[in-house]
Amino acid sequence: MDAQVGQPLKAESSRNEMSRRTGPRIVIIGAGVSGILAGIKLRERGWNDFVILERAETLGGTWRDNVYPGVAYDVPAHVYVYSFAPNPAWKTRYAKGPDIWRYYHDVARRHGVLGHIEYGKGVESAVFDGARWTVTTNDGESYDADVVIAAAGRLRDPKLPDIPGKETFAGSSFHTARWDNGISIKGKRIGLIGAGSSGVQVLAAIAGEVAHIKQFQRTPQWVFPVEDAPVPWWKRLAFRLSPSYLRQTYQQLLDFSNSRGALAFETKEGRAERDKVCSDALLRIRDPELRARLTPDYDVGCKRLVMSETWFEEVQRPNVSIVSERIEKIEPQGVRTIDGALHECDVLIYATGFDAHAYIRPMELTGEDGITLDEVWSELPLTYRSVSIPHMPNFFMLNGPSSPGGSASIVGIVETQWAYVDQLLSQVASEGVLIAPREDKAREWLAEVRERASNSVWATGGCQSWYLDHTGTPAYDAVTLPELQQSLAAPKMEDFEVRQASQVASPVQ
Ligand code: NAP
Image 1 (cartoon, rainbow, N blue to C red):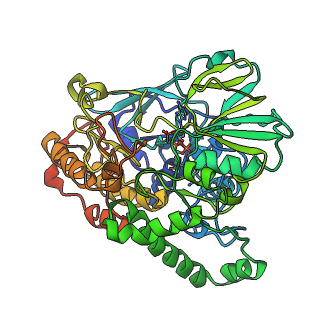
Image 2 (spheres, helix red, strand yellow):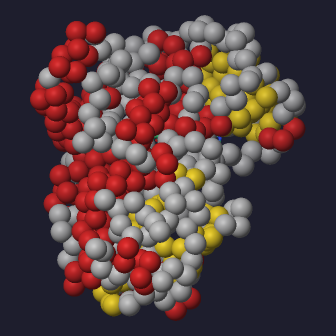
Image 3 (tube, rainbow, N blue to C red):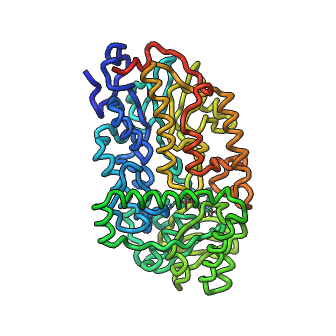
């Protein structure tokens, strides 16, 4: 009998049971944009013996976690879709967070993925026994798998700053990715720590309804003005009636997004036009003293470019203050800066970003011969082409370490990575093999990535950012989507160790 969808998949199935199944038994970790994609693609293959383990109570990753006012995606909506599921219904040029969440939920439903997801399942470990994986979740349940696909996301775990006195604050406080809708901010005095994409979106969205907002800005950010606009009804109708028009729009935006995604590694001359747009936009800040404090002293694109149109006006409201003095501590009444000033507030919002270098951790991974992920990653998160890890056979990742960064749409990146992993899965299924990258090839590849990124503006632009790892080197590959597509077109099998495992993934019938 086939394994029941949504039920724990029991270990110790016999070779005979496996041969009746539709494809290898697969555990996918995470039901965000990447995990949903993996589920859809497995079903397209007719492989139904998989489960998606999701630690939260619903799917959607980033778009489930980030529900702060103003949350939106600054890549044009019509390209922030799976290539096979264009969306004629976007209401705005840049999609709002809840609309994006609905899109991914809807696609997952239409493609029959929802029934494969088990919620409240934080993966704690995955152990390879020489043939197969056993994945254990925080409720003690074990899942047996031929293949594990980690789609755990990257900007996932909120980072709270290490500011003394945080716990003494008498009002309400929360991180932007843990927004508390039970707390009204209307008419309140708000302290907002952080001036990245989330901080800028929050400020622009709430400044008009709060008594006062003080944004603590440790480093100014370049803001690229992008104007949002509703998609008129007739255009939505045209998209619905003409799939080719919708596809053409997708392609045009993809080309545009690819060129913008290359911002980080263009030459300084190549970036000049965008630099000028950003510095010209700052002239909209009328008070020269405020403008000076909002002007970065590093190159555009060094930190992830913030995009907004409304911020330029909202930040100049009389009830908005930008506080540039360093924070000394947090006290019950508010935030104390090093100049001795106490900035009183009722609600304190941490727009302080994410631990961008946790990757699949804190999950514990034990691969062949008992080698652990901590051992393989003792120096750097060593992967081969971001999708596989030496000594971890039949373990694959989407949006793993060293995936391309910049402002390109992540959907195109994970679709490209999937197409590559899919080719390896074909071999796993048809030949019953274990596949892991050779360690020397992974090291070679990682050295190439780090060399490439060392010329990017992330490294040379004169700033600190979450693009940089603990060694100060960019942790992202400086390639465009077309370059990624080319490099991942077909696996070079000589870069992998492929061995037979009689108990594993018997040829699919
Ligand atoms: P972020 O870009 O990492 O910004 C964190 C902010 O918090 C920075 O201004 C940082 O200052 C500040 N900060 C951190 N610790 C601090 C401390 N101890 N004291 C004072 N300030 C402190 O985080 P984010 O804004 O959440 O954005 C993260 C990423 O998510 C973005 O870069 C983007 O990729 C993605 N995102 C995208 C969108 C979108 O529309 N596409 C929207 C939101 C987020 P420093 O600069 O000095 O470190």
